[in-house]
Picture 1 (cartoon, chains in turn purple, green):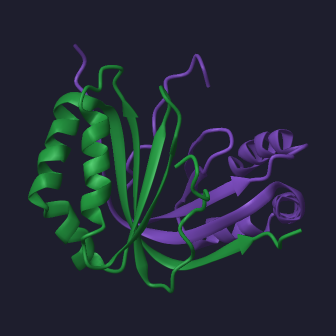
Picture 2 (picture 1 turned 120 degrees about the horizontal axis):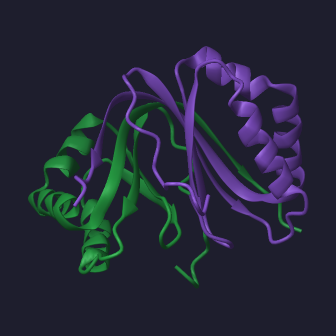
Picture 3 (picture 1 turned 30 degrees about the vertical axis):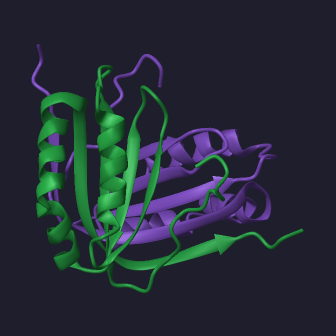
Length: 116
Length: 116
């Protein structure tokens, strides 16, 4: 992250889907980091995956938004066996609470400051 | 924030809308904090406003997700005169870049760890 350009995922051509995952982790989260990294790698293999935005600070609310072309792509990701095992472990060990919203994007736009 | 329970907005009964705003601010952001606080107060007055989740860390990507019952509520907020002035100032002064996705939530669910 540190030497990459920090940039949100660009506006895509609608329709597409945004999966909004808002979460609060427990203090003990052994193994979470490795699994999160693995999931970030794995989701890139899903056809129709468009990108992901993540923000949060330690001890606070974290928000992850995954963008997918269609419901098939979301379903493929949701039911991926390794992802399902991670979801299960998340409920058993890592998360204090979370909310998941699956939403169809109807419009979007972006802004980029002109250089100089 | 510090002495409040940190909790994401709960799953609502669909349909409702999620407005996902992902942004990177410039280093100079004089006046941003006051305006952001004012906007958080102002949006609560919009009929059909359901809540907001925010996450981010200084110098990184920030994500704000606002939840609204319907498009009328979003339009009322989008065209609010004080909010429009803030949007304009955001593009002129505060943001390096941002993306806005307006999305209709089709399904949602939540998880809350059992106490103890």
